[in-house]
Length: 79
Image (cartoon, rainbow, N blue to C red; front, side, top):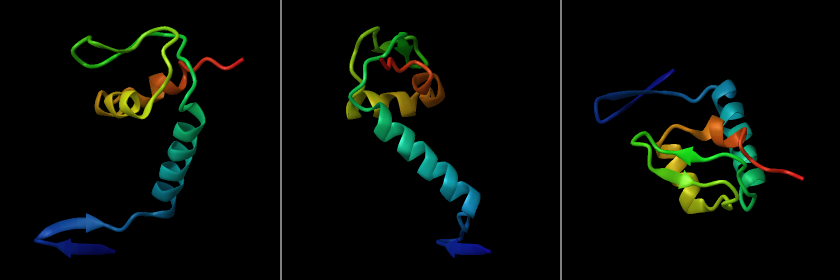
């Protein structure tokens, strides 16, 4: 099903898309407040999180903008 909004086609979110969004949201909630075990950089090479830094909302937004969420998920230090 397509929905017209100001002459722009926007497709309805499928069940799979909702599951992915829920799954990603759950992962994000689980990593907030945890330290990282690797350096996370943006596309220009600027350090967003250094080893041992705590994942905050601000850092998370920067990581999202750098399209590095998957890398961040694999870089969380858990005891």
